[in-house]
Image 1: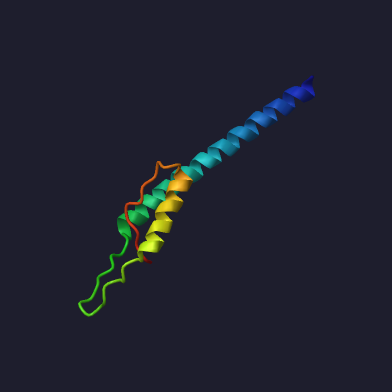
Image 2: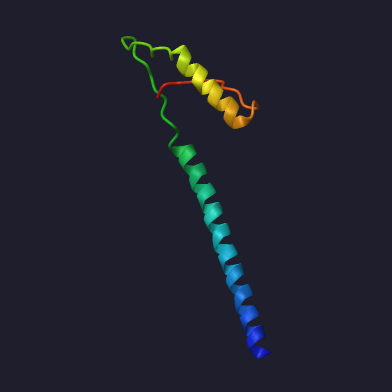
Length: 85
């Protein structure tokens, strides 16, 4: 019976340790994200006057994208914006 008590205690201590370490990783990750977003914001792309505007996406491709979204989301999704990257 003593071995069972020792095993249960070891299991509880191990699980608590893993849980605590995971919480530390989660909160350090959130803090890192906040710091990066504060001190290194995303760069904005500035278009020059001489650059040509992006070509519009063909209608058949837009129709295919809309159809795919409808199939995947069971007519619940909506395409708000399509950009060429």
